Length: 164
Image 1: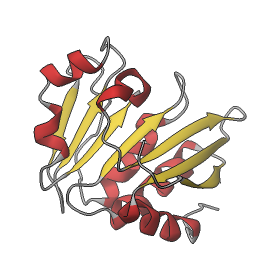
Image 2: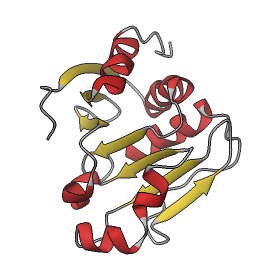
Image 3: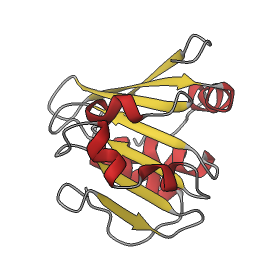
Image 4: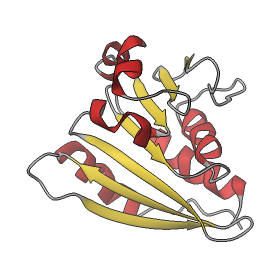
């Protein structure tokens, strides 16, 4: 990891729509080259969060997890490169996808199941661990690595994206 100790912020979600709303709020803040890594078990809400990020980037089409295609590309305010590493065996498989072309492009890279390809992840990124705490409740733990993501974390701390 980088030499800067990561900082964290946690937000609570009470429904899938609220998880999407948090993702949408983040999507509006993202800039070219940002890398978002999602962690959490099956059914944690990674895809719901990714759908919100897409909405925040102005993507209006249907957003699905690329479990079998491994990567989906969407066009919005910025391109979104949505990876699903669930079926990958590790960093070598990820490299075969050419992930570096996407990570350092003018879009946003979002990786579900990032723990499966941890060795390939850049030292500067935003990690989001989604923890299931109830049937519909989740806690989203944001961890920033690198200066640009520390700035983003300050914005996340001020999130007023809850749905009533």
